[in-house]
Image (cartoon, rainbow, N blue to C red; front, side):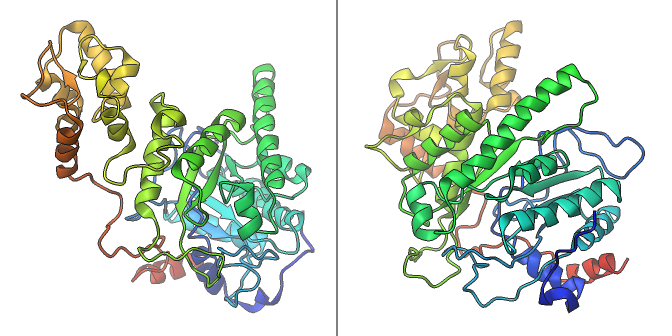
Length: 445
């Protein structure tokens, strides 16, 4: 299927120039998870996807850089106030052709620089037009180039449902960016986007996944529809919503749309606009980090948003992780006897993760555990010791008082996934230092 649609004044631009522009333009899209699907190559093509996800590399701020992460185009008919690619900005513009996307992906994959593709896009002409071009690129990758590796694509709100359906039969994961937590925020900062248009493809993808699972039960060799599920992204700090509001929105998305992940992106002010907030302290990275920690508590630890925050306590404690903060507000539940407590309660102890809790439950079948056993299991005792007993005794004589435990937890200095002292907020570039020479060689074959 050869498209006769295409592309403006970027035709004479070199592929290297396009790659520089369009990889840099994709840096604020963080929802590029690659886990959750297992598919072996069938021997007729190249690549495969392991069940644990493809190999990841991360920048200092935790962002995934293992995929070829680019925009199809940074041309855009929308004028979102927070977006560097908005139509009113005077920035270098570029667009790939479907064949260029295929060539880049295959060349980089063959050289082991990447293991998959994350493809997003601005809006060229209209959503359906753009999605057709993306579909052509992915269709050629899967059929002409026989690429069987991981592909994550963005579904563009407003595109025809039939295109989303076709693309979902080729992609491993799809995502639709919520952008901002509320409809009011969208109206203010992204007047061309509407909440109902964003939720419509989310619902379509969810229903398509459910229907496809039923088909796979009935017909074992039926093609898969978005086997790694869908995700979304929420910008944090561009609008005045509290952490409590953001977490209740995320919780609702998990329950109503069965999302695999909600990603939180600290707002980076790249435009001069009176509607955008000033950021004297830089992007709210610590707030983003707390939201991610709380998100894990929702997904894996059995917490609900109303347990972590409330209207009277609407924002996370910047000094303590959300689990420790919750525990300190519920000291009546502690200390927990590690040899008798049920799994769900053990999960709620600061310093004990999911794997450690599972190991504790298994290990105590063979005998009573002591603190040395917990250390070998992987429990972070410098955090857990205030909240647990082994055989009725605490690790050290300690006071079960909020102020005392808080001071000690803060003094232990939590490790953060970014440098709070002078961090530059950016995705790791494809063109740092000598990497530009390597990528140039890859493009040129």
